[in-house]
Image (cartoon, rainbow, N blue to C red; front, side, top):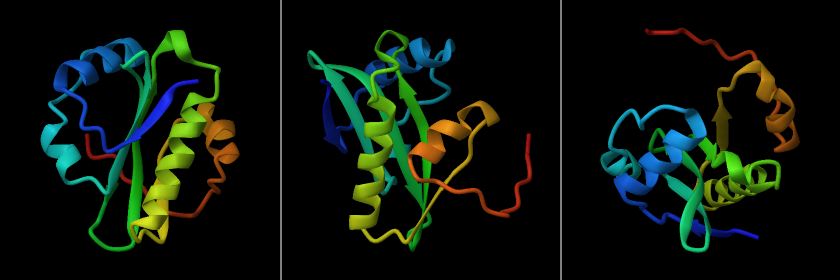
Length: 128
């Protein structure tokens, strides 16, 4: 079972390796400045290698946002993403967030509902 670490600040190389495997593209940016402003982020490690990740951005107040949930393809279907999201939820609550939001594609509806997210009537505008 992978080890979950709170706020591990993985290196750019670790995140790029995971991102490339999970999403099939190079990481879109260096996460260093992003993670330093996050409410929390959680890494899943197997044999000291980053194999899963989730970031929780926030508004500095009561709203937080799940972003970048990723698990290496070789490690999927083992409950790692669920553990990551649940741990991120726990830490966000502990650190003062009252609302936790997530945007996701329709094929992930079942996953996020299993993580206790419920649909809302929030608005959304795509900027790019």
